[in-house]
Image (cartoon, rainbow, N blue to C red; front, side, top):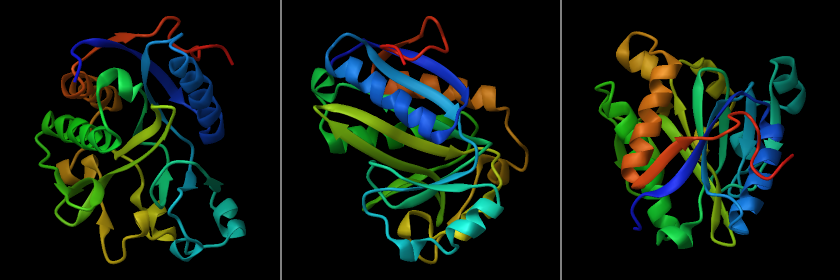
Length: 229
């Protein structure tokens, strides 16, 4: 892995999923043409269920009308993996990286995302673990972070979603990641207190920089998409 390649970090705040997806595509196009440095975006989404390439309707336990009545929507997306939930209190990390420039294979990228989440949790003394054949991060048999990526032209999109203080009852409407009989958890549940999201974001950025051996720097201007929008 090449050391200290720059990564511009964006704090996108609270952003609708489809707006964030459009932002990722615009940004990835700029990274793909080498008109932009690699990008790490940190954000939260309003309630939304997203179905990845391996998803199936049998893993969604409610209909569209019921989801809308609860204030959520279902979006089909191009990342890998099955169905998952995003919502307030969950930290999402979108990584838009040129893997070829970094000398990383797709599987290396997934492992690096897992290590980034493990490092974030370790900053709060939360003992996460990985499970072979099940991408993501776990506390015992409970999943605390989901991972799903897409890669086009050697450039990644999507990334990881870490449950920090989010309402876990939203997951009752799905079979998370298509895995039957396993639960979900959050940092707040494991710690017994709600860690400040800003502190978790700081820890995540530091863990990312260490794992990817990257020079992470705040993007300027902080809220504008790379390459225009």
